[in-house]
View 1: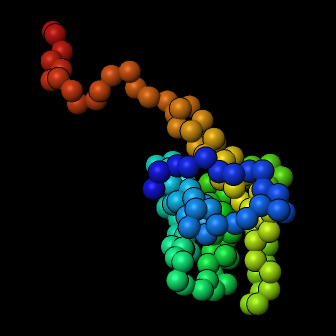
View 2: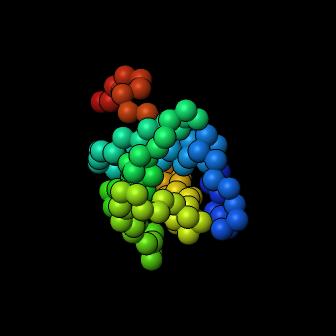
Length: 137
């Protein structure tokens, strides 16, 4: 999945559009998991159902992206003072502006941290096993 800039300025009056907003959040989580795979030990994510206009979402539709955001931070790098995922209950409230800002801000912080970690990794200035090396006597 390609990285899409997260929306980190959600307000109560903003309208959440599943085909646009959920798919961006889902795609960014999958992108971050791919970035993390190159830097950290493997870990599993909960399945995230793609959004569709003709499907009524169940609790896991909202819960799994939030839990996966937590799992990404727990398995890689948790920014200082990053809040935890909240508890969801059946027929309870789903995401609000605070939840969306928390998740998407965490995604942006992880993306920035992964890029910095990747750029800070030491790299050899030459290729091992390149040309045959014959020592002179």
